[in-house]
Length: 94
Image (cartoon, rainbow, N blue to C red; front, side, top):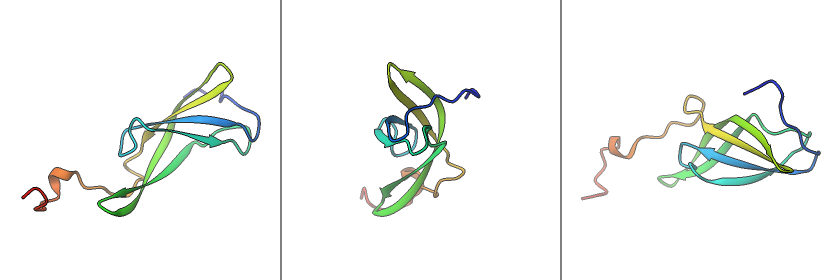
């Protein structure tokens, strides 16, 4: 990302786009508390019935008209571990 971080008015909404992980393709809106956006978001999702924290890091932020849009990519290093379904060795399909 560049050093010039887009800003919005404190209390304004911005749109979040998730890329990768279990929230891939999902969007959300967040409220700016300080005129900026979060550099990192922890998204809590259910994986096999267990709440799992998936960390997403901001990779791109831009103004589209008067709306701030921020793209976040999954950060597997800082996220809770999640087994690939093919590696679980369970008998759910049998």
